[in-house]
Image 1 (spheres, one colour):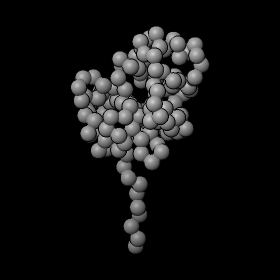
Image 2 (cartoon, rainbow, N blue to C red; image 1 turned 90 degrees about the horizontal axis):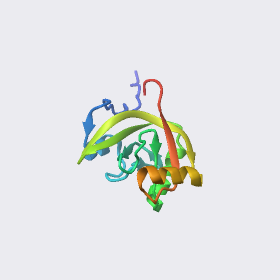
Image 3 (cartoon, one colour; image 1 turned 60 degrees about the vertical axis):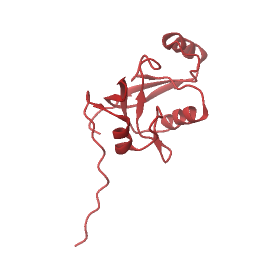
Image 4 (cartoon, rainbow, N blue to C red; image 1 turned 180 degrees about the vertical axis):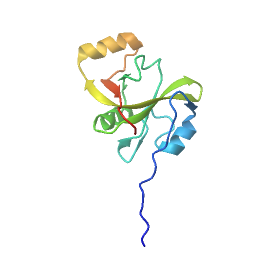
Length: 136
């Protein structure tokens, strides 16, 4: 009788619990300092700060730089939800839940509005996220 191979189990996080970046990295992979860590062309989570993303987790504001912008485009190309973490204090990232891309904009007016809200000048696009439905 042959053994049935099961896909690897998805790492579980509990909403409201805090994790450090090494733990998130160990469970999901990706860069330890990336805001959108990715593995093999797929974003594995979002690690967001409220000072740079004031409407997170429902709005993500990628900045400039080839790594940052390419991660944002990677996220836009994915259909599957990702775990989202918000930084609460040094090396404490609260798990908020699973979110998926709803829409994005590179419209100047939308970006200008977010630049005012965040006091940032480097925003390249506005990514709108929604909470994923169902058990993941």
